Length: 476
Image (tube, rainbow, N blue to C red):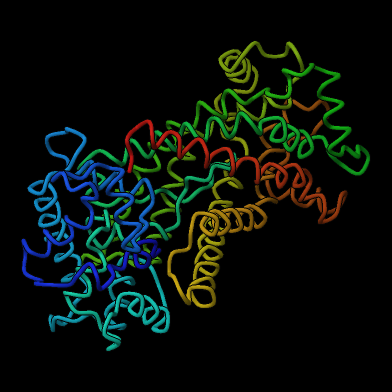
């Protein structure tokens, strides 16, 4: 949540002399112009900032340079440097005023708590004090404009939402399942078109990740459908069975549909989330945590309803035998002919019911882990770092999956019932009762081992591909 609320503190040496306008900029420019040629290139900017104790990181430094270099000659002259900082100060002034609720020219801990609550993020007063402490230069436990400006002078964020969004729950991590919380974008990202680039990067990352872990995903489906007390299919025997029946390529059966459905589902989810947020916005224009959760759950349900026939196709292809279907369209044609349109919505109810525990627990665990980290490990920095964020996201998604897994298993069995010889066509309640009676509670978790096995590689692949896509699409 607070990646930029620490780590960009401007040292006193960089703020000496006259604080007024041009002389302050000139003093900073001299410190960065290492070869004294009247211009600063990207290497000088990086070296100079590190020397002043402001190691932003390559991505942030390149964002500053790109915004400042208006004539695109690969260097910043003093005019460009000054213009960038003046423009940036205006944006930081607006961010400061948005936090200074009582307009007394100072930001207090209670105002930080209040402002973040409006944005759907809850923190304690103690956590807010830690954040202020990282900015407070004079030890008053309040932050005035000068302290705020100096702290964020080289922060490439443009508003308070951008400053805090790094700690918001994100769906960049694709672990192959569809029950995820929608992404949220700032107004600036919507205006500049950054939102569709981020969605595209996330979609490509998800496609590569799902393809990389498809054998484990198919094994999970096979164990969910065919695993029982009499048929003790485990990971080794499951792989042997799939390889014997269809060869190596059969391990990716159903993956095509799983990848194709990413684009429509993501687009519908994003569109629906924005619509539901507007409907649930309070009279004062604020959207609380509960409203965000409800909006996210409804958006997930809307997207799932729209693409659900593709979920059925994915399951049927995964459990199908070699030569049974020539592809996705052949599978759809045969289901329609033999079972009718209703077959494309088998298992729909447990699927929709699974969204609530998944999204709720996913968000709750993420907030708990985030809060715990801030409380116990943010003593010297409020910057969580990428591994903490990945860890929180992976753990919360895994807990969400664990809670909704029995419903996911029942959904898969209902989708596949007609394709399994001799299997009775049971509804959700009857199927649940039968599993409990014949297989016990453990039966509701068949296939969970390969499901958990794919989490770590899926997260790793999706994160690496997402970062590469961001670079290629010019996302800062």
